[in-house]
Length: 289
Length: 315
Image (cartoon, rainbow over all chains, first blue to last red; front, top):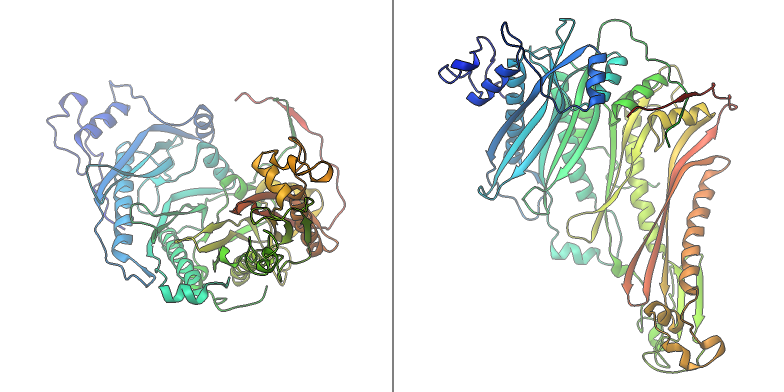
């Protein structure tokens, strides 16, 4: 877990003199100006931007939150080269660390934007990786989402005092709150793994037989479990009771067939205080065509 | 499924399953309806098996193997000497025509090596997944996903099975956790209808079709065969390709029979049938059918549903 690039939002400059004001640490000047436009202040009526659909907007309002603004963070990362042994399956720990840190930086910056808006959390977070022609071995990691704030003044920030992040849609967020859970943060774990090449001898020996290759099974199994354990460690660190919507993604990025990144992602949740009863599902007949 | 090397869970798995936050691969809506049914997620469970997967195994072929003997008197497919399973059918050229180009013999047969490899891979992956669930003390696994994908290279495939392990706090734990492809509302509806999930069931059937002369002409879309003679030997422009139809029907029948044999008195719920084919050579096809579903058992009589509310969506 890397340090947050700074707790912004203390004394916010007015848009007119923003260009001369010192930058909030870690946020580009344009970002703080854009965010300042969004805020409600005396003499300035704020507005919000969001990528929520109308239905999502309605449900988020229904559950007692208000969208504050569309927030993002990015990080351009140079992914170094790590030597791999041709015939050995192993984790490439340097690449694992790079992939993790780059995403974490993007998320932290998004978090800093949300903090600046005084948000309680960010919903609908998407994490993307882009590659550009101008940078070999360089990837841009982007995190975007919509910052929201509770209308009743209750703080939903997590135990680090930071806005929660989650990849939940508005609908998912509503349902989750109905079940008596609150999101704590988008948690992830990653593991970059090199799969051994099979030697000619091995291939010849097993030609004509269809059998399990236990070494391969174990290697891939191990890689996925490592990614999931790391995700779970992050959730434990937030004192979560569980993780919903776990996804396990596999990508080779630009490393060729034999090097695979296993990424697991999910939203850490905890039970909220108070009694919650899930509304009884009703039988309906849809009159739509 | 028989236990083999690699049934031990990897160290990372043991550590992950040991405790802390549970993880669930369910969507939030499915998660909510699980809670509503009285099931609590305890962890995301998974199982894998990587298999050597080589089509060189395919026995028989044009003018090879046993067919070499037949090829002496004319072109033809070899009849498989072994591994053809329950289904074998043969065709013979009606023309009485001898040539190296002319395929005098044709055969359809069950491709048992493929079926057995698939059953082994799928069985290992799902049983390992259930094993993880057992280690968590789970009652069952819901929302099972079980794809098969080629791995690096191409001569290996990986079978995967994953799902969300759940406990039913008020019910006794079964000795072996149940498993089901269903989750959320669809599972709730099954239980509402009075059925409990038992296990995921899947089978693959494969039929190899080695075409004889008539099939060959039909597949090539030519009526060249018609000049060989009238009657049985002729090929008209439009008509059923008998040998392919027979192979397709056999593959489906084998899949159905094999699944039915596993069901006992239970039912198969939410069955899906997928068909695929692979062209091994000209006029040489393998047709595969995968039949999957959740084995379910009636545990209570069906209660009529409450009156439905008509709804118009504004979206």
